[in-house]
Image (tube, rainbow, N blue to C red):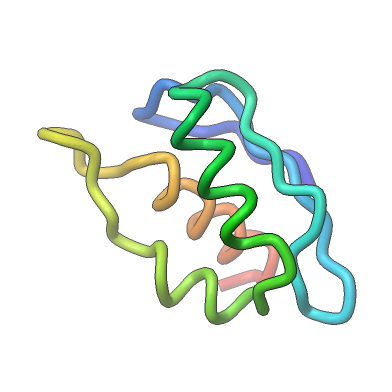
Length: 80
């Protein structure tokens, strides 16, 4: 899936889901170290668990963050 982010430095997140687990998570743009770290940490994680852990994380004064945007992308993927 390809998700256009809103309100963060990264422009886009791509990922696949196989057997309800995240694979091939990649952020386009953003803070390279942080986004690569998040992508590696969620690799192989179940979709609902990733949503539970990442949903609502803020970045400084912003009401969202790259991890939160990934949670939003996963919710969209699930249709919730």
